[in-house]
Image (cartoon, rainbow, N blue to C red; front, side, top):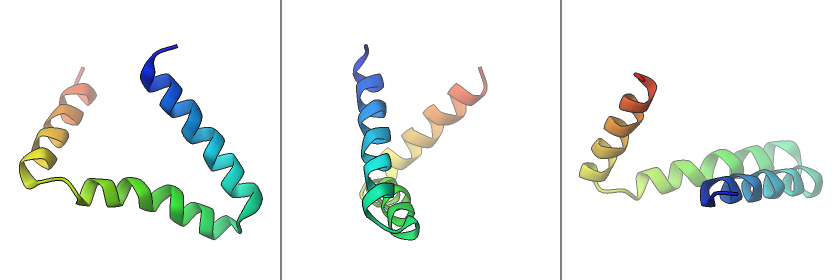
Length: 60
């Protein structure tokens, strides 16, 4: 199992646990808010590089 697959599996497990213990709106806020906050902490040059890589992968 690759490193990214392990991270994805862990994220799914945490998401399921959040859905069980918290109301659905709170878990949705956490699941969407963490990646958004991580994106906002990037420098503008890092954001440009991330968008460029994402576009290249979509254009394959």
